[in-house]
Length: 519
Image (cartoon, rainbow, N blue to C red; front, side):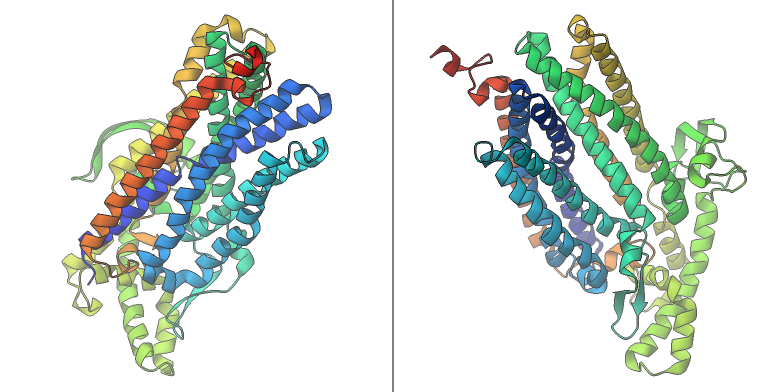
């Protein structure tokens, strides 16, 4: 059996590198479409300030993109180094969207970024705008294919286990592509990225306005960010509602944990705002809820129930017992793939194979599982409720706070009064970290809430890891954290440096802090 320490360290290493990487991704996704907007206005009006806006914010975008690529490459290699059995078991399905992402999206994105920075004096205005547009398309296509892969981990459609090859095989490529979980995750994630980009531009523009520096440049940037951010924040909330529905359909365990819903409630279930969670006794000591709301979000109906954790565990206990039958039939087929009785038994129970494999965390032979071990495996099927419950609520709270801020900022631009509201500018400046915190919390809820599975209901996490030494994992974990922290410090140093310099860093002679202007 794989040691629990090895599994935990492998998970921690991947979580650390993924969370570091996702500090850079939302800003890349979010800023690129704002560059398209700014350059489109420049091409239509010929006003050089819009070109300067595109070039300046594009410079900050480029710094962030470089760091995002550096941290992202490591993640794909980790599937081979740290999660070798996972790669073997599901590589036929999971590898396809990642390969397409590299061939279709990343090369397009990288090529267009080079032309974006070095093509200003070599391309016509429409040609350069087309480059910026294709750069944005490539960035979003990259996110699409990665989230298709991740969506399949959450809801493994279009594939089934083959006893001939002893691994998962794709049966319907288009079902994987159009997986509802993947599509909803894509639009929700990129909308969160758009919000992040808008908050970044809004906050820095607010700082310029507070300092009364490069006011016309900052006003235009503020206006674009306010409008784009308002639309993006609304999209995040609306699409978050749709994401809640798909989670309720495909991952009822995650939904119940997010809501700390221990018992199945009469339909339509209420939305729990806050609660005192008692995990030891598997109940809430007290809770405050809004009637009906959770039922509408999770089921889109007034009559369909959302199962509670206790009901889900009872169903999972039955699936574990059926999974034992599936594992035994598979062992017979491993020895003799022509055994007709074993084929029939396996086909009847293969949907529960993953639940039987949960027992291998505790015993080599699933038939040796005692009632106590079976109960431990059943308890494993539900992630810890407290972190899920509060992480989700903090994420949602930050989302609504940003929506309010963008709404007020947009309203101030309609009244041409943003300069007259220093409290609003200060609020925008201090809210700068909010979208990153919300994005990280969103990924935590999505990934931690999938446990104990790497592929939901199919492959347990404890079976997915490579056979590495604990010491090598400690060493690589420390190395990654140190290296990524250095990269993060470099990113922040460069971002702060060029943000402080402002558009004067372009050397056009039109802005403050620009030595060329005084030569």
